[in-house]
Image 1 (spheres, helix red, strand yellow):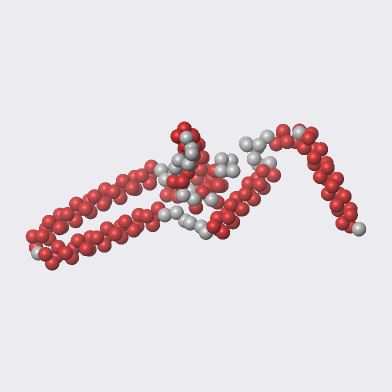
Image 2: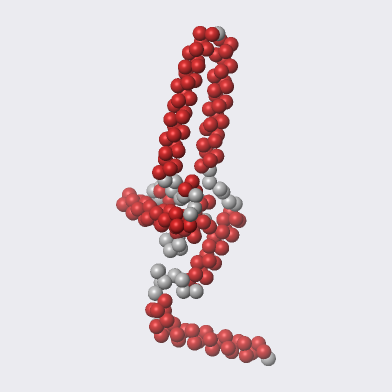
Length: 189
């Protein structure tokens, strides 16, 4: 179902799942199978991103991150390097002033650093759902996919004309219709 409707799957389930798990090699899986699965995953991610672009989703919420996320990480690393250099310069200046100031300022810079590192994971953390909520999301997604299939909107993946022209299925359907008619008749008595 994920391959048929990648964006819908992402909205209902994928954004609550860990994306790293999809990239990891599975026990007993050959390296070639892992690479093929990763290539298929990349295609699915591109489909999801294309749909997100088409729908006007904020780039910060795009699946798989992207160039902007990499640039943000690079900017954060540069800022951290600059702060480290400044703290080293401050430490050198404070050594000249006295030992009391040197013990106070490093602790202040540590507080700033710990708050900075606290911000990064919080900004990138994914929403998590309980098992019950995840099961509910799965049921909603499955129901939606079934409705889409039954209404004939899944023609990209299913040849409905082949089903319509299959006489074997017609025989089965007529047996079911007769059985239902008998049940209805005897229920009325």
